[in-house]
Amino acid sequence: MQSLSLRATAMMAVAWMGPALVAQISPGALSKAHHDLDGPLQCANCHIFGAGKPQVKCLECHKEIASRLAEKRGYHALEVKSGSGSNDCARCHSEHNGLNFRMVRWPVPKEKFDHARLAFCTFMQQL
Image (cartoon, rainbow, N blue to C red):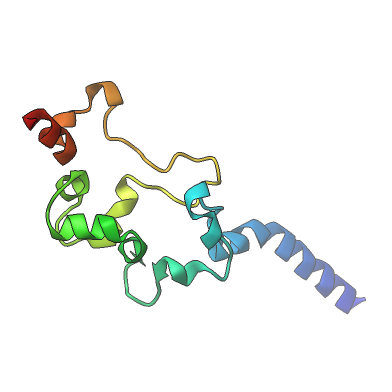
């Protein structure tokens, strides 16, 4: 009888803590753009573990953005905090919110966005 009670208690604990345990493995599904990286065993593709504070590896795949940051050109070079690298990406690009979540979070509505800040727009204005 005691083992039955122990098993029932364990099952209730797993049922109660299940969602929290799953969230420790994955906080949620990735966006459409990154769905091929989704899954509990894929975390190391994007995250660096054991680095103290959380670290991400966005710029390892997004090489064009990394190049623009290094050259200090384009919109990302204006927005990214110096020395923060990939870790600053999450300020505007949020993941683990599901397939249909919009990954880009603009700081202002597009009607109020200063397009002159973009290198391409500045170049086009010079033509």
